[in-house]
Amino acid sequence: MSTTTMTPANGAGRTALVRAAQGKPAPVQRVPMGIRVVSGPGAEPTPTTPAPSPTTADRTVEALLRVAAASGSARTRNLAEKIAGLVQELTGRVEAEEAQRREREAAEAQRQELAEAEAQLARQLAEVRQKLRTTGRDTTAQPSRSRREGAEQRAAIRAWALANGHEISARGRISGEIVQAWAAATGSEVTQ
Image (cartoon, rainbow, N blue to C red):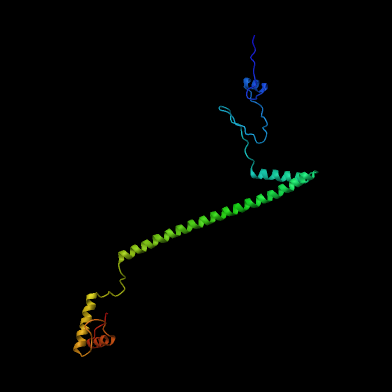
């Protein structure tokens, strides 16, 4: 009868090889700090423990600091003081970051509200402009006279002024005195 000889492979001990041959899981090994353990292909992933909730972690740290502060060792008490100071600093930083996040969110919400208000005003302005285009000019104002009517009236004033002995040029502005005299003499309204 022959026996199979198992030789350790890759630093594994004989016990680990026997366990593996029997299909039993290997015991959890402690790995020194700084060494990263990587599973090979086909290996089952190692279960991860969920992170403790913040309230449990806070109570644990506080309880640990109380125990350390009451320790008989001066080194442990000093370390507890340092850690308590760091926890206070960390708490302050986290609270400051949270306040900044809330301020950013509030500013973003305000920007969003202003953008919506701007869009609403733009829509209202477009509606007003459209109404002005469709309705035309204000109907309560007097209709303006055309240029032709104004030119005809100025020609009539010039002819009247020459016929009644007033000095007037053939072109240019007509003086207010002549216009008033013409209006009084003919009973007409001045439209220029």
